[in-house]
Length: 376
Image 1 (cartoon, rainbow, N blue to C red):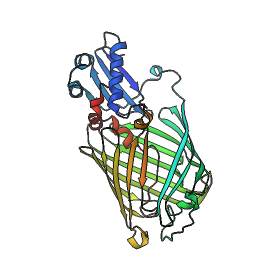
Image 2 (cartoon, one colour):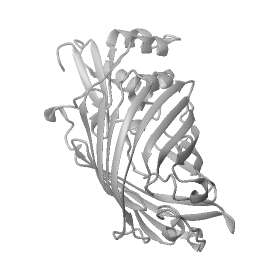
Image 3 (cartoon, helix red, strand yellow):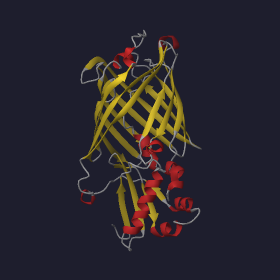
Image 4 (cartoon, rainbow, N blue to C red):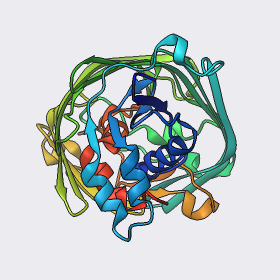
């Protein structure tokens, strides 16, 4: 509490419509804040760092709660700005760090377009754990235990003129118990409109190493720029702790743009896992209910003949919010990518926790899309 202003820091792990979390927080504050408080500053925290600050006037909340057009009138009166600092140590809720979250549940993995078996499936049990250590540090791990499936039955060998960074996917699929990732990540705010991440460890099933990212994203802008640099080493086929000899430095410069009407584009230029240089263009259609569908294509200095079957990397991707199936609010989604083939050209590192999609949800363009659920 500072004078007539109350500042509250929230962690939203439930509502995929981020404006709904802001609205519920604001309505709680109208009931519990001292009568002397006129303004509420709501700061959504993402991975331990502030994503933005939404300032609302108490009188507006009380006046517009039952207004037929109250959501949009409330958005017009809200102030959404950047915020660099999180809560002071003495203001943090006790016992919030370290904080451990975990889950145990089923998984299904699929591979497609093998001429001998067009669709191959694995099913098993997945254990996930995440420890928030405070000050933006996050320790994360994921282990799979296959129960049944045939993804590892393929003995297909595709010759490649490039380092075999993805074309040995069938050899990785033979393992029954796998460590998908084990990482320590640090998230931080180096300056105004800037967001940073450094992640080290077993980054994905095929590679381990270090990944660093810096994102420039003004709170009120549809445009963002990011740069990512990685130095990684290939993992053993059993996906435990061993490493192979192949090492590579890879990274990209990325531009993001929200075209409006649910269309979102991204362009990446840089060096890929096989050492090839080029770019990726992607376009997604995002819906107000959280569903998302998109496509991407990657072209590098690898010729179509060197790339092999498929000529260049491409795919279709879906993101499905799970609250539609669970019957309760949850921020989790199921992401699916359909690729014709896993080839070596245009292969990009798969790092969990990249900044952009986490941060932009709390910026003005994205909050505006979901603001219709502010009073929900």
